[in-house]
Structure formats: structure tokens, C-alpha cells
Image (tube, rainbow, N blue to C red; front, side, top):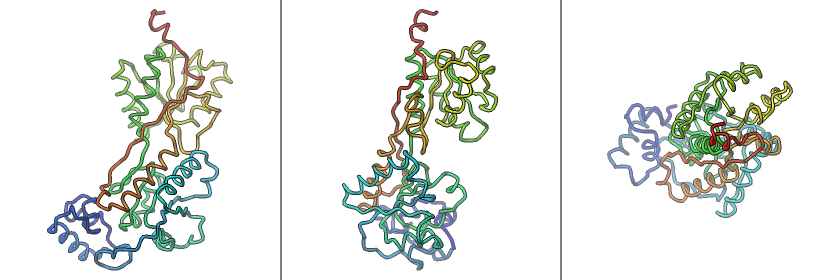
Amino acid sequence: MAYQKDISAVLGLSISTVSKALKGYPDISEETRKKVLRTAEELDYKYRDGRRGPRAMQRMSGTIGILAPGSSDLVKSPYYREMLCGMAGEAAACRRDLVIMGEDSAEQEMSWIGRVTARKVDGICLLASREDLYEGRFAELLESGIPLISVENEVTGHTSICRDFRKNAALIMSYLRERGHRIVVFPGNQSIEYKKYASILREEAQKLEMDCLTEDLSVLSVENMMNLCKEAEVTCVIFTSHPEAVVRIKKWEKSGLRIPEDISAAVLQTGREETGIEDGRITSVSNTPSELGRVAVRRLVHILEHPEADVGERVSLGGRITIGKTVNDLSGRAITGE
């Protein structure tokens, strides 16, 4: 069975154009539509209902599905619970019912499309991990033509609601500069994701006439940290997530390093399950999970009511700073040159 990406590759069209042509959107020319339909037939592409040819219009059920692999973990995560509350509130405001589907559901042996069809939902908010998406677990569902919003991870051809890393980076760097910090270090590993984040942080630092150094997290011992403070004049460490910061800070303090007197610490981005860690002690940038949930449901309802609006865009939401006790105020020293 072929997917929309196969039709896209054959015709040299974007996946969003192929998707809109298959759905019969009015902003696609008749010539393009015919090419897409002809190629779909040749490649044996099958639509949501399993038949060849454009899928028939289906009666709306008034229900939105939340597809969440490992959904049993949702109730354990403050971040997820807050997001789901936002989704539920927005769904109620839009007069829609909400149903959560996961791997621990009664339809466990069914395909993802089978589960969605069985629940008769009009559209889906997909809460999938980056690993699940990379491994192609949802390829068939993503190509099915079912209205779908991806939350927190960008999916080609579908509208995605994501945290804005660049806005968050600019926010934390601006705050540190106001507090008198000029040279910071961003520890991590050699992953592609870390390198991307490091590049963005350096760019935002340069805009503020600051320096952002990088260091391997695995070797960031107390001794190495003190050397960075003395030799490179580093005054703050920016961690990617709360777990990294909590583990490292506890080790440092156990070894006699004082936070923030000897070195300041901040968290760039609060993760899915990390809301509330350390009672807000660590200064961090965080997105409001409930807002991510509300925006996702709002966008999905809009797409259901206006199919032509499904253009596969990325909606990026900036966060806010939670002021903790881990960033020292060096502004007086920076001004006087002490």
C-alpha cells in the first residue's frame, strides 16, 4: 500500500498539496487534483475507509480523540494532566466531547486507524514521542487523511503545536544578561538535537553581546566547573531540562559547591513530566501545558469546520520565566567592574 509521501515523490508536490487534493480542497487546481488522483490509483493508495478513490464525506460525531501512546502514564505526569485539562476545557467551550485512546485501551490489538475508526472521532490530537514518530509507528495514520494535530513534535504535512525553543532561549538569555551574566556554559552531548539547541543559544547570546560556551555534560565535575569559573569567567550553567539540573546541582552541593554563590544555574525548557520539580527552586523557562492543549484543540476544531485551513503549519508558542533561587544577581558587579 502506498502513502501520500509516495505520491508526493512521484509528482514532485508537497505532502500538504497531495493531502488537500485527495480531500477535495477548493484551493487545489483541477489539473493538479486529477494528477494526484491518477497517481494514487496507479500506486494503489488507499483512503481512510479502505476504498480507492476520494473518501466519502463522513457525518461528524462531535467527538475529538486524544491519541496518547502509553496513556496510563498521563495521570502520573503533572505536565500532561495540565495539558489534558486545557484540552478538556477548550473542547467543552467548542461543544465537543473528548476521548483518550492509548495502547492500554480495549482495542489494543487493533491498528491505530482501527481504533480511531471504532471510536468514531472527527479528528485527533496526537501526543506521540519523537522516537515513535521517527520509527514510523504512526505512518499509516498520518497518511490516512484523518484530520490530525500533532502536539509538541512537528510532523510534515500536519499542523503541529510546539514549544518555541528560540523564543525560550532569547527569554532566558535576556534574563541572565539583566542579572549581570556575560559568559554562560551549555552542557550536553553530541546528539543532533543538542547541537541545534547549542547553535540557537549561541546566536541569541551574540545578539546580547554575551558568550555561550559548550561542555560535555558527562565531564562537568565540580573541579571542571570551578576551572570554567576561574579561567573562562563562566558565571552560569544553562541546562536543557530539570532532571539534568537537579542531578547535577545535588552533586555539586554535596561536594561543597554553592549555588548560586559559586555558580548560577538555570533550565532552558521544562519538559513533559517536570512541572513542579524542586518547588520552583530552579530558575527556568516553561510553557504552560494547558495553553498548548487549548491551542491544539482550538486548531483541530477550526480544521474540522474549515478543511481548507489544514495547511500543515507549525504553531510555535513561547514560554515564561519562573524566577527561582539558582541565579545570582551580578548586575551591580557588572556595572562597577568589580
